[in-house]
Length: 110
Image 1: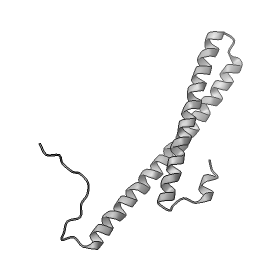
Image 2: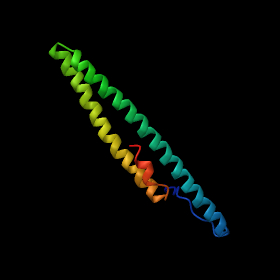
Image 3: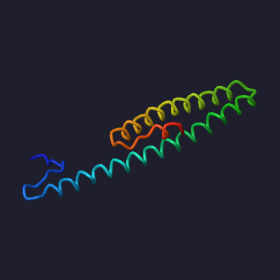
C-alpha cells in the first residue's frame, strides 16, 4: 500500500500569489496556536499559584502527620506543574520571536 503524503504542495499551474496566500495562512494558524498556548500558560499559572497557596495555608493548620504529608505531596506536584508551565511559556516566547511578534514588554507580565 502506498503512503499518503499530507504535506501541502504547490500545483504547477498555481500562481505565486496562491503560494503566498497559503504561506500567510500557515503563519496565521501558527499565530493563533501561539496565542492559545500563551493563554493556557497564564491559566495554568493562576491555577498552580492558587493550589500552592492553599496548600501552604492547609499545612499551617494541619496537625496530624498523614494529612500534612498529603498536603505537601499535592504542593510538590503543583510546583512541578508550575516548572513545566514555565518551560511551555518559554516555547511560546520562542514562537513569538520566530513570528516577529514578540516584544520585550510582553515578558514583563510574567
